[in-house]
Image (cartoon, rainbow, N blue to C red; front, top):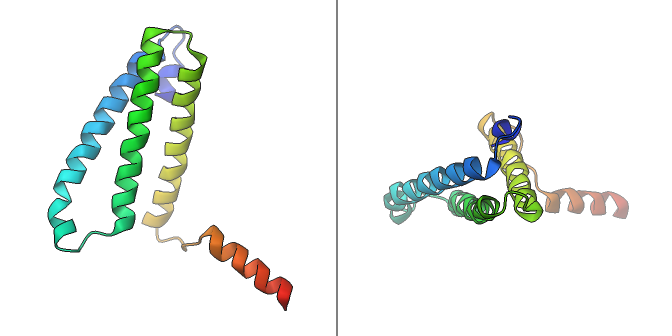
Length: 120
């Protein structure tokens, strides 16, 4: 969608709608395909939450894209689509980090480590 937004005079609502529909179909298919693994307890809750979160992001994007299709100058719809793109980009960075085997960290552990340093 970001690349389509760079085209002068291109209406982003149609691209956002198409990407959201394809994303929803992809996530729905992924959820169906992992059902046997879930029943066999070979599928982790973290992976399921990722898919459900992506599904929710695509639904939010679809609602905002429909708003953009109805009103080309809908600032809130455009802002929502932009926020979804940024969030998906950040999730993509996190997943890529996991794929290359980068160390796992959490903000809870980070703050706990800082608290312990202060106590010592």
